[in-house]
Amino acid sequence: MNQNFNLEEYLNGGVERLVKDAMKGTLKNPRESMFLAGYAVNAAKAAKTRHVFEQKGEHIPPFLIASITNVCNLQCAGCYARASSSCSDREDRDTLSADEWGVVFKEARELGISFILLAGGEPMVRKDIIEQAAIYKEIIFPVFTNGTVIEEEYLQFLDRHRNLIPVLSMEGEENTTDGRRGKGIYQKVINTMLAMKKKGILFGTSITVTKENKEEVTSVDFLDKLNQKGCRLVFYVEYVPVSDNTEALALEQSDRVYLDNRLNSLRECFQDMIFISFPGDEEGAGGCLAAGRGFFHINARGGAEPCPFSPYSDCNVKESGLRAALKSPLFEKIKENHRLLAEHIGGCVLFDQKEFVESLL
Image 1 (cartoon, rainbow, N blue to C red):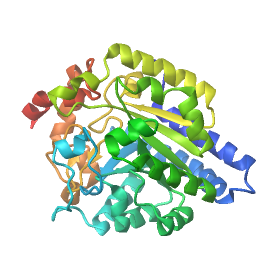
Image 2: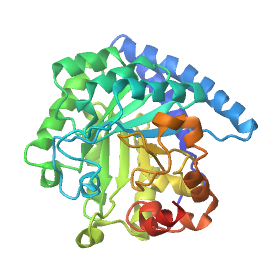
Image 3: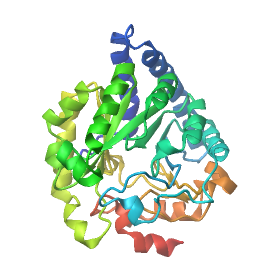
């Protein structure tokens, strides 16, 4: 793996590249240019805030993952969230309200967290929470969505609030995507992309990488199609096997080396796009970034978890807040145990070490 790769520096540099690219076409896309230019300034301020905490011996991660709902309107094959019962057809009673998420976002801003990934379930079904996120212009919120509920009213809202960046899920080309997500989903996603491109809305795509699709989704041809449709961010997420009969789909070390090499090449080839690999990019940062080392996860009920693929918690941000959650005994024990940073199978080292994580509770 590329041990010299720094994910935080790459993301900050990526924002600068996006600003420059937007400035070139500023007459066509002035809102994006103005927002990105402003965000670059805010991101620098946030980094200084985190540095102040670091000088006091308190590490604040630059990123946060928030699953704002457990509801999803699709039933994708091999979905980890449904298999782990963190996703269903109906909202749980004890999920955080929009106002409670607003408190979380406010504290994140005060701590210098400038990048919060919104997930679910399908996060776009909770527009009240999306509206709360829109208030915090200093934070970029990539919204990981299946893209099927973004109609004209939502497009107008996204057009007005540029800190919300839709990240549409795909598995590759049409047959591959529809094979996992359902017939016709690929075309719905493409139509949403084209509608966002027409309005000049910055968006990305999230791709679950398996042994079967790794070559397809990292091909120049596939990515050139996305680029032409206006996609500027690509998140590659390694497949986590939800059952024994799907373990063959999970990437092995040789597959990760292939993916890492392709990413290096793609970053050179498509310099107007940002490519992020999870958890592959973690290795360049010295291992697993979960449990607050680089990020942590908040589930729909407010539980502070090391990672979306490690659903264990000993505190709730509703009662403790973010700052206290970062010092939770579970997080501290995980960060202290170097054996969790070993080679992993199936996309996530904490998922592999779930018995050990359970023993820490």
